[in-house]
Amino acid sequence: MQAPQTNRRPAAERFHSLNRRRFLRGLGVCLALPAFESLLPRRLLAADAATGALGATTATGAPLRMGFLYVPNGTIPAKWWPTGEGQDFQLNETMAALGGMKDKFQILGGLADVSANQGADGGGDHARAGGTFLTSVRCKKTLGADFRAGISVDQIAAQQIGHLTPFPSLQISCDTVQNAGTCDSGYVCVYQHNLSWSSPTTPLSPETNPRLLFERLFGTGTPADRKLGLIRRQQQQRSILDFVASQTKGVEQELSVRDNQKLDEFLTSVREIEQRIERAEQSVNQRPDPGIDAPAGVPGSFREYVRLNLDMLHLAFQTDNTRVASFIFKGDGNNSDFAEIGINEGHHFCTHHHNDADLIAKTSVIDNFYATQLAYFLEKMEATQDVDGHSLLHNSMIMYGSGIADGNRHTHENLPIILAGAGGGTLTPGRYIQHDPAPIANLYLSLVDRMGVPAVERFGDSTGRLADV
Image (cartoon, rainbow, N blue to C red; front, side, top):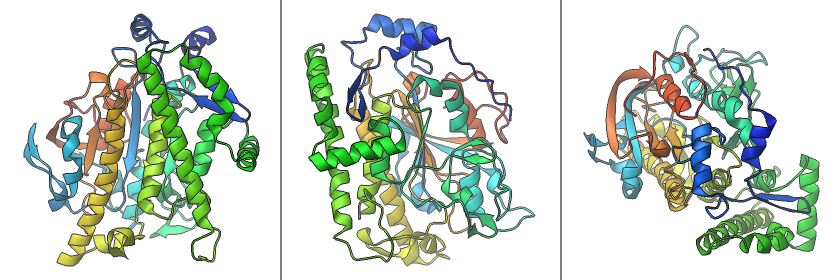
């Protein structure tokens, strides 16, 4: 893989972009606001689109976002893949929740992650599925600290455009993170718990705690500073919005009626998330003692946990805190149960159904649960207006999928992949297309091209660009 050289723009040019961002600052608080049409005229958007002043942008000059959402353990293919083809397709049983968003995504068949296939090093499909999913480079089989994968596609983009936003990229997970110990057949756990790699030997561990993610997005200073700010707010029983109230009023006076409505909706979302985290923290002390310290800010319901973190990813994109993100629902090989939706057996156990009808049905329920969370996120992105009048989803490329196709057989060909959003008008959603068999790395090359990254000749095991996306 040949990565492009870092190409930072001159400081004056970067300032030209950043000085249009609006921040509300208070004691220990820095709240980035969405872009507003009344503060960023369309003529400036057009100028930035022409000059590249905003980095990865759409034809209208709005920022282009790229996100990767990972689900573990594969699927029941017969219940996941749609019927029909092109625009005339029908969603299958486990994809039914996405029916209302059918014209906002495309289903891509034929993509493979051959780097995850079993070779001379034997078993370990779950480790390889996670470690190769965004790198397309075979993982080194080891139980030590000499693990090695490859730079991930999100970091190829982040290293080029990350300087344009407060966070070059975000990594989020709704699972515990283990970077040591054995997780799968002689592979160290690091591969299953990290999608993003800034170098072949440097995984970027995701944030799992909603409270810490919230403070990271909206707090200021070092982690110690952010913790101090949180303690101060808790002692005073105040929201972060209280610390920026006076500045909020000043911004309101500059905005149009429509933008003031947008501001109110945004601040309401921030406060609602803050309250949900507070309720989760309060509930920790009310749960049965698990024998270990429960993490503050993590809801007892996995569904609420997922949606809370997805909501913060949505806010991060909306406020241009980042344009690149990876999100792990659960690490591959995870065997947590889904008792809250009636499945008491572990997910991994269910996927190895050996054609048992009951286990197939239970796995399908779990597949549908994940598709429902994707629908929730996409609907929220679609309902949010971006600075150019299009939706946030229109100006995004959101890939959802797994590094395992058939969870029962541990296959890595014909992966279950959804690509949502219109990429600012450069993608063709609303269809199911079965591509000729190709490495998923070919898709990644097509995505980073759209992110404005200088041409990458090859990535992982790519054989070219994926045409017709």
